[in-house]
Image (cartoon, rainbow, N blue to C red; front, side):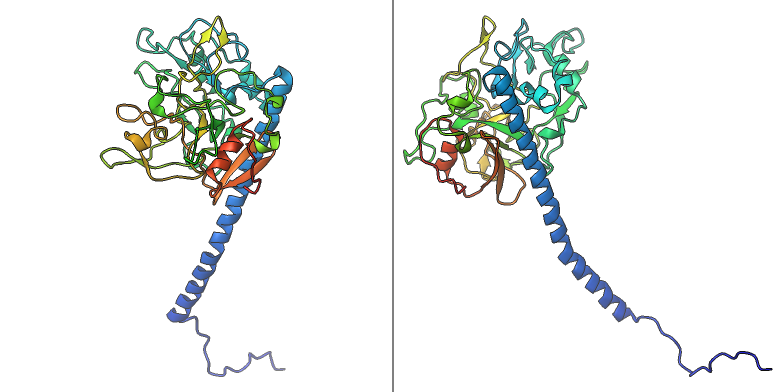
Amino acid sequence: MKGNLSPPSCGRSHRGFTLIELLVVIAIIAVLIGLLLPAVQKVREAAARMSCSNNLKQMGLALHNYHDTNGFLPSAGSADGRPFSTGGSFAGEGTNWSIYILPYIEQGNIFNKLTFNGDSGWVNNPADGGGTTPATSSAYNNVAIVNGSGLKLYRCPSDPKPPTIRNDSNVRDAGGNESILVPRNSYVAIAGAVDNIDGSGQFRESRNTDSSSWSWQFGITAWGGVLAPDYQGIKITSISDGTSNTLLISEQSTQLQALDPSGAIINDQYSVTSTGGGLFRGHSNGSTNGTVNAPAKYMDARGQTYTTIRYRINQKNGWTCGGANGIGVCGGGAGYWNSEGANVPLVSSHSGGVNALFADGSVHFLSDSTNLVTLARLATRDDGGVINTDY
């Protein structure tokens, strides 16, 4: 009986890929990956832009809920005092809109632990023995509470800057360092716009700080917007231009670049920004008998988590710090730190523009090509001008 026999060999052996064939296959795979990667990046950025837009929508809901509860909208930044807080005895500076709306973005547990005793945003005297900030000050209390809290709503996913920053509230450790970090905001309130913004006379505005401001070197702060500094008791009904035609909040969610007088590049996270002071920084116009003052031409002109429209959207380069062209952008010019500029533009890492929250709660994408006069009218609640809604 014969067993099973293997098929006879034909005398041919199986060979693998040659080196050239392998290189061709690898090249094809590399080309495919190269074609796929931009598509993946576009999808990722689209998701980030949508998440950023949703953050602004949540802030819009919070602002309307704040208005319904209090009868007015929060200040862009104010001293501690009525109607925003009870005020107090410590000398310093108050805080800004992003703190006032914490109870309306499901962060009431944080807000209820904060104190507003006159120095909630910055304490005048950190000296207490070894140089640490007095533990009884609001700034010390507030910075310690918010340290490590996250507050992701205030962070645009496309923002390349670090999500936390030194507290900049003058809260220092025994070594004299502002070592406690706080969340950094990717968003700024829009306080208004600069008079005669493009030199054509189409837009005029009297509500601007001038050279009588002690901090005039930081630029021009307006109070014709909806979220303006100090206290005006702005209500939804105060927006005579219509809520769908008026801006509340937009982005400063990318890093700008400037040059100092020597030509050195300035692009650190603290410079050319309105958010370099961290979450709590507010305003220092003072209060009278515990009541926040109305804005005036001589008030503090620095931008602290808010900006006044002066330049086009996404004007990311070409700034000079420490010279005439840098005033209102980098900060205070020569001899001053390069942060808290009053007129840092709306900027983002999104392609072609910025997300912006309007007073009706809607979010629109404003393109880089938005006309300056149109932008100024959108930033102002009652200028009465006609706006081309094709942003």
